[in-house]
Image (cartoon, rainbow, N blue to C red; front, top):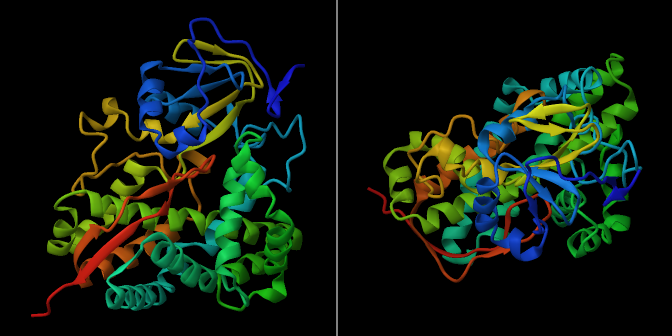
Length: 411
């Protein structure tokens, strides 16, 4: 078997255009919309000559591949590497990188820990910290919405929700960036991220131990399941690790992207100020428009067919969620615009099917608390410099977002 970037190299299926493009090039990751448009024009699939695999970006096909866990598995890795053919850099996630029936057992435990009732118990803390942060930012007036806001809020509230006795915001953010960069090829982004592993990974692993978690948090609930022998203590630690790997960087990204959308869309903040009930639709539109996770892979578990294309077992397929979430055939001619009133039901930012994001309730609660506090207190939000996007092999995130804000006048 011939290998390519950790997976089986395939030949282009009949009728699929060969495309000499690198979706992991830093220039593409920093400004992906032209890539998305060109990908959709090659629907249903394109053959990535550089990686000898398939890619899809039209909404319907991407949703089909991404959601059908029987034909397209996650247990062989959601990045380029095929775990059946190469050992991963760390033990696979027992939620994200497994399939039923094992996935059913572990997901049941983590879903209980992150249940709506458990999240509701955290909402007052989420709200209070959001209000404190926005008030501090208003005292400053000018700040970097990434370093001074988007990274601060989740690394303040999420470790408390999990129940970490010790926290380190920088390590938490860098660990998330490392996990998502590891899903790509062995490029400069992945190598730079992985170089931080010897410092970050032991620290993260230690935080996942039972005695490092205080009672009442999501982590303690997971270990209660281990005490009842629903899972093993080792699996409990791995589930807590899953929270830390996926629960920080994605929310950092979501908050930064939300402020970018509001700052660059005339009238958007005014609409939120006038109608706080728009916060939830606004969150969904931010997720659709910016796709914080821009792409995950699936592996064909058997010979199959999608949209008339024959796909052989072992084929790696990059599902471009960013392209699907901007597909005009699904969202209309203004798919590339941020429309605060839009209600984008069915976007793929949090996945779909059995592998939909288990932490989405927490992420939405954090974003809701922050945007509600922001809209209630801020009258003016505008760019104070050029935004810079941070290339990452799987995350669509800002590196810097200089902004200026002014307070709302009190009646």
